[in-house]
Image (cartoon, rainbow, N blue to C red; front, side, top):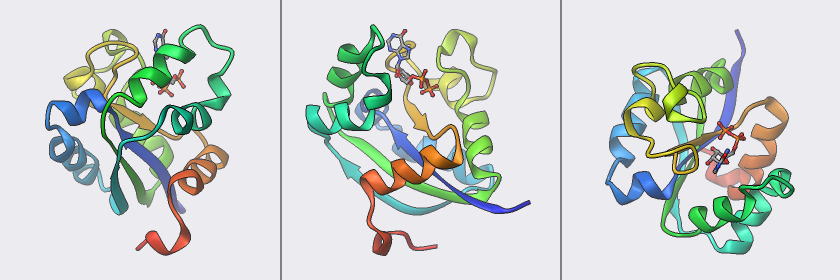
Length: 140
Ligand code: IDP
């Protein structure tokens, strides 16, 4: 299995509850390595750019408002099958549908304020990493 990189974000509802360490520990315990990490309070414009793929969805405004409402922690994770593994640990978008033991089941407040983001494919992982990090910030 190839070593992959993926982009992960701890969202404002989770940083507000001081869950950065707890969430990062779950990722590390699953074998993912944090090779870049920084705390970012994104602007509305940065949120709109990051979530541009969702611009026609009914929840776009609400999502960008939420994502720029407080600090986030943006991270790059590395490991075997990192993209799928991160998605598995995160759990389903809606915490009501998330499996037991997943981050969203444990911590998400709602379908919108759902504590974490994780890239869903190699192409998006690459784009999202590039959106927040420069090459020299990735220390594998
Ligand atoms: P994902 O984060 O599990 O990949 P997406 O469908 O890509 O889910 O949606 C991106 C983000 O948009 C979600 O994580 C959530 O924060 C927000 N979102 C998705 N659906 C809704 C909704 O119905 N209402 C409010 N926010 C939503």
